[in-house]
Image 1 (cartoon, helix red, strand yellow):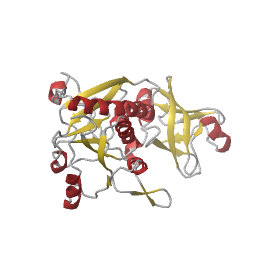
Image 2 (cartoon, one colour; image 1 turned 120 degrees about the vertical axis):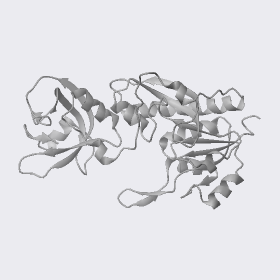
Image 3 (tube, rainbow, N blue to C red; image 1 turned 30 degrees about the vertical axis):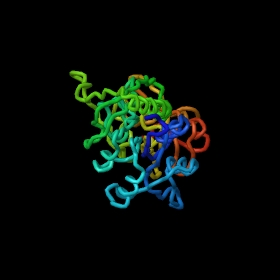
Image 4 (cartoon, one colour; image 1 turned 135 degrees about the vertical axis):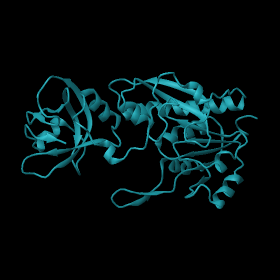
Length: 323
């Protein structure tokens, strides 16, 4: 069978999932249909908003399904009617066996980590938060337990100390598009030799998870080493964004989002969270073993600004606190 005859059903939702779908279409692969999440309310008006994958599918006149429930019989009937030979999943949701076992060639997933490390919903964020110097992408065949199927292919990339999660996301997104088409080609050619993840464990290494990130997860703890706080901020930048509360005398606390910082190792006897500033150009916050220099931040209802820009219009006093 060649790629024009191979019927592919593609499942995905966010921007990360658009690039592989684009590569499949541009490569002449036969995308029989696309499945994405139902439209969700977004923005101040809570208007229903289509996912990036839905927008792309509509622009290219691809058949589309948006099931609420993946075990609903009307959805399963529509999926069977597409007669997929192969299903591809990129940043979608956990599939029931009745769905992933349907195609004769199986279903494979693209995951943004070097499995078996960082199984879960937020692998890019957690890899950067944990100060990893390397990550990558993996294609693997689905089975029931999430992110545990046999590995087909992996690509590794370095993480620089200056990279934030957004930069890593964009590099992996581009590589992911290429890896998906290479994986399809390998399956078509009968060249796939899947490797059980149990065989990929490195003796003595710790398996790190990548659970979903909630708002409270993103609160900065200043009573940590400088490196830990620095990695935490860049691991959540630009989204969902680390935050802290600014406490100043005689004013209500203000939530501040922090996007970019620098490490300032320096001994001090200040309580972590104490602010040093000249009120004009810099904002340094005490951590356990030095200071974190805040380079860009955002106040409620305002846009992201560099620190010197924000200080021109908003007064932060020396000795105030971040908590």
